[in-house]
Image 1 (cartoon, one colour):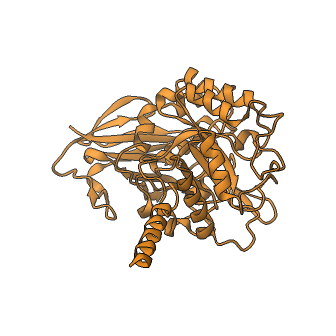
Image 2: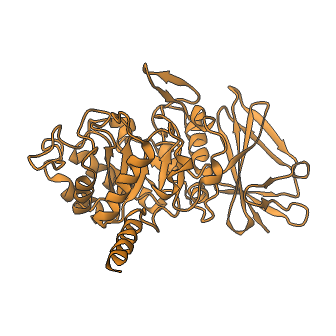
Length: 401
């Protein structure tokens, strides 16, 4: 009898430990990550400046909350007890003090590590130290962990991420767990109970539709990533998101391409993680990133990932069902010249069979709202007419009148 009770207790404890933190990332996380612009050239003052800019530029008010330090924040070696330590030159005050500063702004703090023996940039990885590292993150009041997949020789991806998930749970501080294994092991098939978001591709790069090779791996342009995976939208939802990588808005593409990039990440229900230098961002970049009406599409409580409706004559049309029978639609001009649209609502059967949603245009009239330009465009009684510039977007929301 005693043995049976002990066994039940062990099973019970195992089940408790083998769970991610629930109630987190009910909508896609919004924030900023250091990697796209700064790589490992990061420091304490930079992070404080970014936190200040969140508030000053209205980004906090728009919904952004996570500031995530990517690779390169730690010393090249662990201390004598095997603990991770912050680089004393880059971060002389340490991680806990930095977290306190970020929290004082009403924001949340994130860190990076890796499932392998070393991070992608050669710093200490968490392999064999998962529980020790998780306790460090908890003691520093970390809110978000991005967990990479370099130097993982012969590790099983699902098992490795489960180990860190369990370590975070054992450390007893709710932390959003961002799985970053690039989609190589199809995390959309197994990660829903492991993490809150998972990358679906290798690293993004600041171009419209290109692939840049680096020997054994590549960086991917915006549309290369969008078109990379098939049949994964059905697994996205509150608390478990397909992550199309950090954004390149403000990093060298045109303003039109930035708008399209941002619109697509919102439609795909991807986390909106900025990757630019907010200290020098242009007014147009901030206008795009802080567009509350666009962000609201990403944050819709249904959490449905959008999908391609059509692609004819280099005009991409994407749909996303929303709460209260509303819909978001984007028209993206893929041409190198401007284009004109004349969209006849009567000729299109708009629906989402996976989620059982349809746009009832026969029995209802819908108001049309231009989300980037914050203006009304009439209703669905008339054709939607507009001119769209090169690689630019018309993003609208349909709501019942």
